[in-house]
Length: 420
Image 1 (cartoon, rainbow, N blue to C red):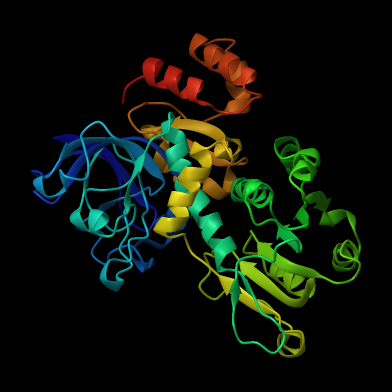
Image 2 (cartoon, helix red, strand yellow):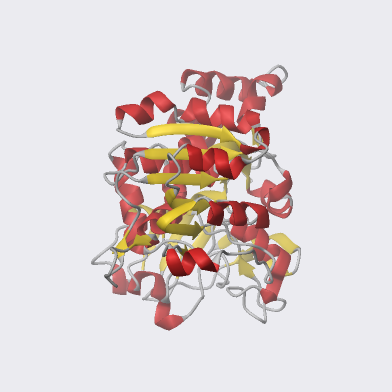
């Protein structure tokens, strides 16, 4: 079977190609990809090429398929896995396989599996590690968003605290405590806000900062302080650019106690320093945003490390349990990650979008891999619809859903979009 896929050959060398998939082995599964959301990690892999930890050294001669936040439909099941999976089932994949200690992952390391493809072969190790996850929801794009959500969930679970005189780590955020999400109104920040106010273990105070009023206003519309209050969380949005001494202002919101949990959602030195400065006693700084610069560093107050028991953690990705939690919360309607999506595109939009990802404003870029479509902002549908009934219809659909991408819009796109 032929597939079309975006493959990486080296630094900034991405190519959309059609090629033949090999015959299916008994321990493999053939699948059709429907949707993939583009992650900043794919941008970093594109910039670094073979220097990236997950990209093979010989990628120039054995290219791999990019994209790791994907969902689709199982087509053909190899004999080994026919007792667990059936053709026609929807799926999502946890890319962090950790197979025999290897960093190899779909979307970085494999020649025949990645999110930016029409058809893929799922290798044995994905099933061996229980990383092929059945998806019972209605909409494919929600399953794509389960991977980035699992990263957020994993970060919350990785945070920890202690009791004075005890060496036992109490995992997760401090329930009822003070939490700050710095640079927190990007797509991943929006997911973190949603998770923080709707999960069982919540902070009492949640402060979300940024330096862009437009982004903060959009976040406040998506996740309102009123909705947070209904769930027992006091939610505040703060533009730190408006304060000459933002550290003092932020600490003042906690009556001077400081924050129990601080999440850093941008790899910016000043943001990391600010996060350290607003920590309270036994405060945990969670460095969520992975830097592109391998020499990235920032100052840390070691006086507070010693006497105030502050500490720092970092996670890259989530595990399979985190992804299952994401799928469960979405399936029950507890959280709605659709607010993370701001742009829609087809497979032919992947290369340009991936290479320019930091330059493109907005949130998640959602790709439908069997469609040919330039990357388009949802808020631009109406304008494009003046000359194109396809976009007019999409604009009408998302308007009913408060301007947010939805299952009805996905249905229309899959039915009426131009095949690639």
